[in-house]
Amino acid sequence: MVKDKTTLTFYGGVAEIGGNKVLLQDRDTRVFFDFGMSFAMKKKFYSPPFLSPKSEKSLQELEILPKINGVYKFDPSPPEVDAVFLSHGHLDHSAYLSFIKREIPVYCGETTCTILQALSEVRRADLEFRVSDIEFKAFRTGRKIRVGGLEIEPYHVDHSVPGAYGFVIHTSNGAVVYTGDFRDHGAKPEMTRDFVENAQKAEPVAIVNEATNMTGATVSSEAEVESKLDSVVAAADGIVLAEFAYADVDRLNSFFHIAKKNRRCLAISLKQAYLLEALGKDKGLTVPALDDEEILIFRKSKKRFDKWEKEIIERYDKQNKIFDAQKVSKQQCKVVLAMSFYDFEELVQLEPEAGSCYVLSTSEPFNEEMEIDYDRLVNWLSHYGLPQYHVHVSGHMMPLQLKKALKQINAKRMFPVHTESAGLFAKFMRDLKSKVTLVEKSKEYQL
Ligand SMILES: [Zn+2]
Ligand SMILES: [Zn+2]
Image (cartoon, rainbow, N blue to C red; front, side, top):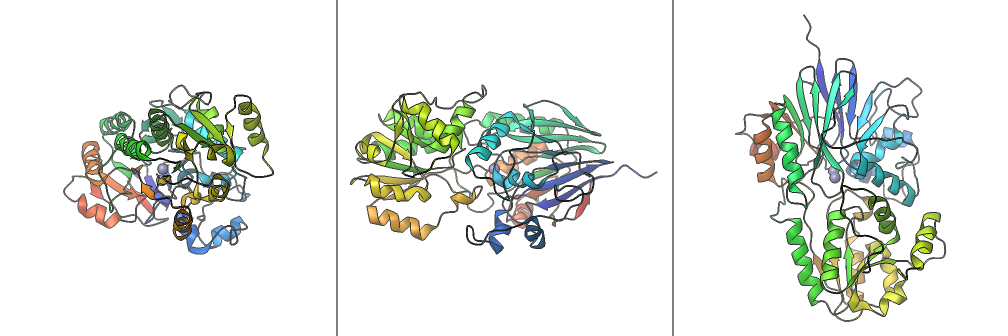
C-alpha cells in the first residue's frame, strides 16, 4: 500500500537570511508557511529607487519570485494552495503575499494583522508590497486551526517584532514544527519557552528552524540594551538621536523607559505614532500611550503630507505634541529623537548641540530602509560632530541556546533555513539525535 505522502519544499530562506517560503504538502492539502521578500536575491539585480523591478515577469525571470503554479494573482489557473500562514510581520516573511491569489486565505496573529494593515497605510503601495486588500484570518496562541487534513497550532514566540509565532503542524505522518524567527533573550523569553515545550510534546518528525546567528553571536538581552541606553542617555548633554526598527516595540519601550528615567521626552515619527495608535488597542501588548506626557511626535519639514499624516498632526497638535526640527532644537537636552538616517536632512534645521550623539539600535536586514549607506551616515555624523553608539541585541536565537531548544524539541529531522551557515549549523548540531538535512531550493523533501 502506498503511504500518504507528506513533503516539504523550500522556495526561499535557503542559503539566505529571510525570504522564507516553505510549502508543506500532506495528502492533498498544501499550505505555505511565510511568503517573504528575499532582500539578498533582490540586491543581486536591483538598486532602488532608480533600478527597481517593474513587473512580476522581471521578478520571476530573475528568480526573485519563484515559479509556482496556482499561487499568484497574475496566474489565471485555479488556486492550488489551501492557505498561507504567516509567522510574523517582517517583510522578509510577509511582503510577497502581495502576489498571492486573493481567494487563498492568509492566517496570521492578530498583532501581525494590525502591523501589516498599518504598514500598508503608511507605506506607498508598490509592486512588491500591496497587502491592503487581504482579509487576514487572525489567530491567537494555542488555537487549533484546521486546513484540509492538517491541524495547525500557533504558539507565540519572542522576536524583535510583536505578534511572532511558531507553529506545530499535525500531518498524517506526524507533527512538523516551524519556528519562524525566534529568540530567548528579548522582553518575553517565556513565550519562546512555551513554544519549545509545546513543540516537544508533539514529538515532531521534523522541524524547520531558523539558524540566523551561527556566526557573529553575542551574549546580551533586551534588558541589557536598556541599561546600556541608560548610560548613553544619562551622560549626553545634547540631543540623543535614536535609530531603531519602527515596529520593534520592545526597543521602543526600552528607549521610552530610559528617556523617562532621564527626564527626557521620546519624540517618535508620524509613522510610529500611527502604528502605536493601532497597537494601543491590542490588550496583549504594552506600548507607550500617545497621550503620555513624555511622548512627542516629530514632524519632518516637508510640504505635502498624506491623509493619515494630516490626521495624526491634527489630532495631536491640540495636545501640543507635534514638534518640528526647530522646536526640538530649542530643547535638545530634553529629547531622545527617534530618527532614521534617511531623515538626516532634518539635522540642518535641528543643529545638534555639542554633546549630542547618535545611537544605532538595529542591525538586521528585515527592512530595506534599514540597509544603511554607511559612508554617507559617517559623513553626516562627522559633519555635526555626533559620536555613534551601537546598542542592539539580535531578534534571533544564539547558537548554544538554539541547540538547547532543538535538543529539547528532539525532532527526528531538522531543516535549517533563514541562514547563510547551514553547513556550520549541521556540524555544530552533529551530536544531537535529530538529523540535519541541508536543503536545496525548490526541491521536495519527503518526511
Ligand atoms: Zn526573518
Ligand atoms: Zn523576523
